[in-house]
Figure 1 (cartoon, rainbow, N blue to C red):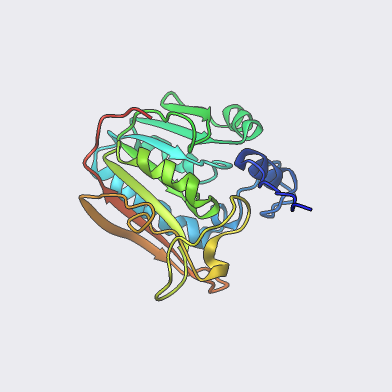
Figure 2 (cartoon, rainbow, N blue to C red):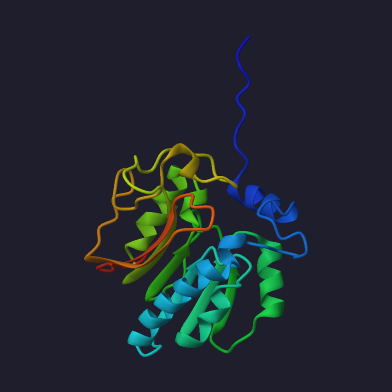
Amino acid sequence: MSKKIIKPWPTKDAMSQIYDLNLWGGKDYDFYSGSGSHDSEIIEPYLDSVIAFLKSHNNSLTVCDLGCGDFNVGKELVKYTKKYIAIDIVENLIDRNKSLFKADNLEFHCLDIAEDKLPEADCVILRQVLQHLSNAEIVQIVKKLSHYKYVILTEHLPVGKFIPNKAIISGQGIRLKQNSGVDVLSMPFNLEVKDEKILNEIIPEDEKGIIVTRLYEIIPQSYTK
C-alpha cells in the first residue's frame, strides 16, 4: 500500500489559524503578532534605529512593509515616510488594520508576498517574517527584493556559528529550534547586495538566540514580479 502524502497547509491558512487561535499569545487581543511586536525591550531599539535611517533620507522614502502583522510596530514608522504600504496575507487582519490605522500616506493590501506582484517602493521592511516561511517561498521573495534599493531585514538567529537556511514548513515555528536561521546572502537565496549594515541586535529576555536587524543596500533592477 502506498503511503498517503500529507501536503502542508498553504501559508495563508497557517497564518490565519495562528491569529484565530492566538498561537502567538495575546488572548485579550483580536489580532496579536507576538511578543516580538509588543515587548518594549525589543521594539523600542528597533524603532530607534529604523526611524534614524528614515530620517536620514528626510522622510522621503516610500516603504513597503511585507508581513505587517497587527501593525503595532509599523504604525510608529508611517510619519517618517513619503508613503507607507503595509501588506499581510491574512485578509481579516488587513481589514481590521484598515479600520484602525488611517493616514494620508498609508495603504494596506492583502497579498501573498511569495506569489503576488509587490508594489513599487524605495525600501522594503521584513521584520521577523522570513523566519516563519519555507525555503521555497523565501527564494521567490528574495528574487523580488532585488528590485528595491533598501531592504531592512530582521531575523531571530542562533548565537554564534550556525548552519543557515535549514528547511521548514511555513507556519508558527522558526528555524531556531534547529540551531538555524535565515541568511538571505547564503544558499539557496543568494541575494546580491551593494552594502550591508547591522542596525541593531537584541537578546530577548529568555536569552534564546539574538534578534538581528540588517540594512541591505541593493542596486535595483527593473521590476516584473
